[in-house]
Length: 393
Image 1 (cartoon, rainbow, N blue to C red):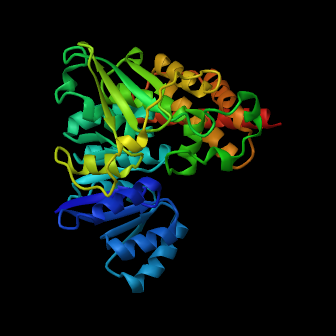
Image 2: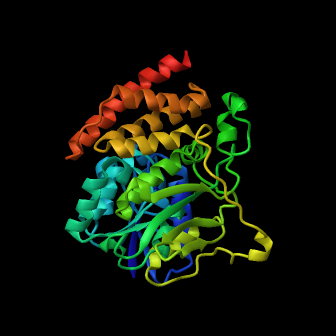
């Protein structure tokens, strides 16, 4: 039996992962479920999947969960706090860790999984965006396996030759083509975006995702973060990663080769496909996703990215070029701006200016240690909050 810990169990990726695992009870065992503070949902998941451990980062929520499970599922041990997230990521009985905690909070437990030599199913963008060089070094040092869960990176992984770690040029790869849906505002006149509401930004046309990731899709910051991730995952330069809009979200990404071939991975927009792929790799298993009906799809469209509509993408490339802590600064500023937008403190069209002002205010430095990364993160959050107050006024 393959033991699995799910970090971010109550989010959309966590729920999809549990759906896939439940289809293969003879192959996988849920060892630990971890979340931030959603005690009600984690309680229901514990009753169904009976993990050995349940973790909530918030102590009050953990106390509530512990009281409820003491009679209904006493075999589930409830842990609390950030350190407990790292603990269940490194348990000896765990073989695979789904790293799906959104935001900077997911960095340390994901790093703990890598240091424990686990197969890390990476759905958390921030591990690579904040500390790409450090994280990849820990993966190599401890013999961990890193498999991407983002539909785009998983698609690239499937289209790559097995020896791509030798370098892209030696294996004949010319460039990586990351596709994007364009989000809910791809056809909305730019001049009307000032009045966009959180509800509109979270209404993704193709995917069912959490609120923060949905806003990132609307601004296309998610694609910017994915460009940064792709460079670390596949040892690519920024000039080797191109973004284009594929509105149907059927082609999840492509790899172009030096002989003129382009390999693409297609599928219905359902995260259970990349999750199942990573759980079973190099094998395949049933995911619960319907087979793609190409006749029903009819046609596939492509569009260039309108940089005026999506300024966050340009900021991500800028941070990638600057290097060091610049990507951690970008990420922190974006988290703060999106949180302010979802809390109705900041207008939608002010998200990118907050990020730009923060990047200008906080100089990028070397990212030689986690301490330097977290210092840059904290400084960026302070600068972003100041920019939010100014731009919201």
